[in-house]
Length: 181
Image 1: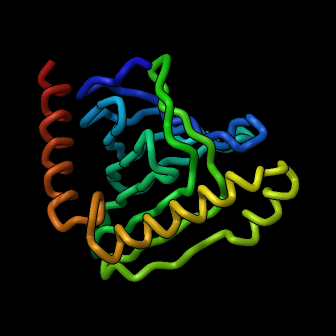
Image 2 (image 1 turned 60 degrees about the vertical axis):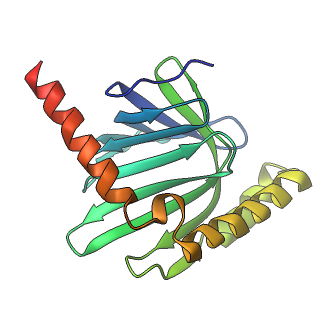
């Protein structure tokens, strides 16, 4: 597997379990790329839905992807604080300047005070039947949801107090480097 490099612009592709494309983020700047972790950032990037509709993201976001955990975390930087949107998903793969994962419907919204809501459980149940999610996938996702909730409560990973500050500064630095070229 190739590894994206800092400052590189990549696409993010979300698929469904049946292999169909779900959503594509046109441009995310890599802030850190290793075999296990990709941290990226974007703002006002074009997003294309499976049905062809497009929209622009509203605020700057720091994105956290892991090659071993079955979730990814979008940290949305808003005026009233950082909101987190977590997709329960397959670990990422990276090739051809695209980071790819399978979206498994379950989502967690985390508020600046670290309270949270689990979303789309009904969608997960419907798609689980429609796309025949194997029992092992269900168990992996449930275990990773528990791990994620532990991270939130313990303020680990992207939920750590200094995470946003560190990666926002790195993003600003990389944007400046691009502008100076």
